[in-house]
Image (tube, rainbow, N blue to C red; front, side, top):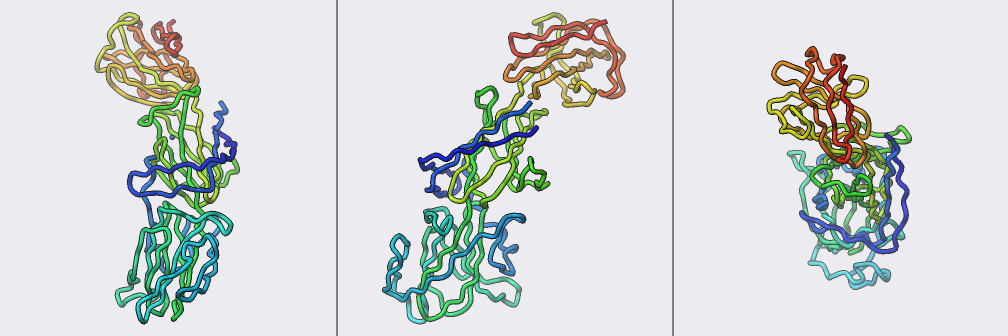
Length: 384
C-alpha cells in the first residue's frame, strides 16, 4: 500500500531521549507528520560510521544518493582574538608551545543553530602509518571542543547519530576556529490502528533511502528494526519507512522527509487486527491441541502457518481462509478481518474434507463454524 505524509511545523522544540548517549536537542523545532492508510526510541546509540569507509578522506561520509553536506570555511583567529557573536569559541585558549588551538563546532545549516550535544569528534593524521592505518591523534564527545595540534595535515571526522562528515584541515602556527555543517535531522516513528496505539513489542520499522511513491527507493535498509518511540538521527534527505505490525501480512509503507535540525514525528495508520485461531468441538469450547494451521488469501496463497491450540496472527483487513489439520482430518473456514477488531476465529469439528498436499491446494468445502463478530472477526463456514 502507498501512504503519504503531510508535515506541519511546530514552534516548540522537542526533547530527544537516549539510552546509550546524550543526543542533541534539535533546537530548530519539530516537524509533525502523519501517514494515512489508503486501503513508533530509546534513541539510537551514537554511531560514528565506519572509519574505514572514510579512508581515503574525500570530505564527507554519507549514504549514497544524498547531497553532500556543506562544510563551512575555516575562520582564522589568533589567540586572544574574538569570534562572531554566538559562536562557541569567542576566545580561544593559549596553546602549548609549538601547537595551535583549533576550536571545532558544527551547525545544522549555515543559518541554523549549533548542534548543542551528541557529537563525537575524532582527529586523524592525514598520512597513514606503515601498516596503512591512519593514526588517531585526538577525540572528544563535546559540542565545541578545542584541540591543541602540532603544525601539519589532519582529518577531522565528526559523527552525529547516523550522520557523519569528514574534513581535511592543515594546521599552521596560528590558532583558529573550524565550523562544520552537519546536515542531519531525526525521525520518531509510531503506529496505530483506528487511532489506538499499537503496543511497542508488536511493531517494528525499517528505514530506506529514497521515495517509495516516486519509485526511487533503495532495496537495502539504511536502518533496520527500529521500535515505536525510537528517535533516530539521520542525514537530511528523503526516506521511506516500512512498518510491520505483528508477524503476518500487516505491512504498510510511507514516505518521510528528514529536515536538517528538525524532528519528523510520523504516525503510520494500520488497518489490521489480531485473530486467534481455535479448533473446537462446539462454539465457545476449549481449543483442541496439536492442531496444524494455515491461513490463506482468497487466491489460495499461504499467508501464515503455525501449530498449537490457539495461535494468534496479525492480519491486514480483508477476507481469508483458515485451514485446520487435526487427527488426520482437515477443516476449513472463511473469515473476515476488520480493522481494529481483534478476536477469535473458531473452526468447529464436523465434516471431514480431503487433506491437501499443500495449503494452496485446499479446494474442498469445510465445516460450518462461527466467528465472534462482536469480538471483531466475522467468519463464514464453508460447509456443503
